[in-house]
Every structure is written in structure tokens, then in C-alpha cells.
Length: 90
Image 1 (cartoon, one colour):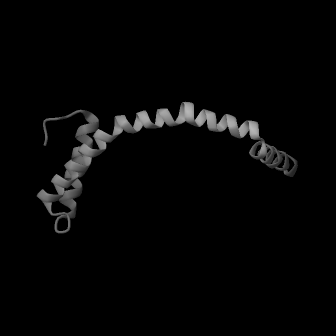
Image 2 (cartoon, rainbow, N blue to C red; image 1 turned 90 degrees about the vertical axis):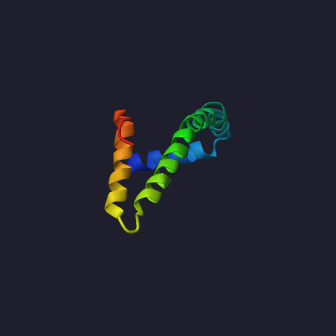
Image 3 (cartoon, helix red, strand yellow; image 1 turned 180 degrees about the vertical axis):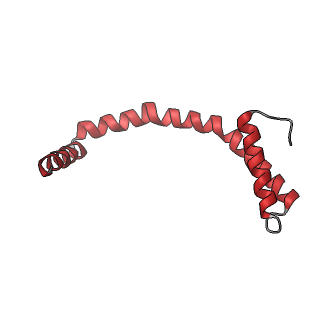
């Protein structure tokens, strides 16, 4: 196994110091990875904002410091309803 480990580390060092590979990695990041991440964030941000607002509303209604179980139950129910698509309970 030491031979295999040494070969892997040697290959990793070679890849890390090769300018062509670094340029290709930077190009791939800017052309493929970053646009996908930006699109995913844009699609997810409204849902995050909505969830944050719902949790604030639940916290105002249940006083989580005094009734932590009730707060947790309502928050879990809200998440469960969103996942299952049940909009009847609010």
C-alpha cells in the first residue's frame, strides 16, 4: 500500500503545480460551476426567505423560550406540510 499512497501523493503534487491544470480548473469554475451555483441560489433564496418569515411568525405566536416543545412541533409541522404538499394546516 505505501507504493500506491506514494503514487497518489506524487500525482496530486504534480496536478497542483501544473499551470495548465490550474487554468482549466479556473475556467471550469467560472464557466460551469459558478453559473450553476448562482442559479441554484436564485431559485432557493425566496424559499429560504419564506421559511425564515414563517419561523419568525411561529416564534411570535408560541414564545419558544417558554414553550419550546410547542414551538418545535409547529416548526416541524410547517416543514412536514411543505414537503408533503399539505396546505390545509396553517
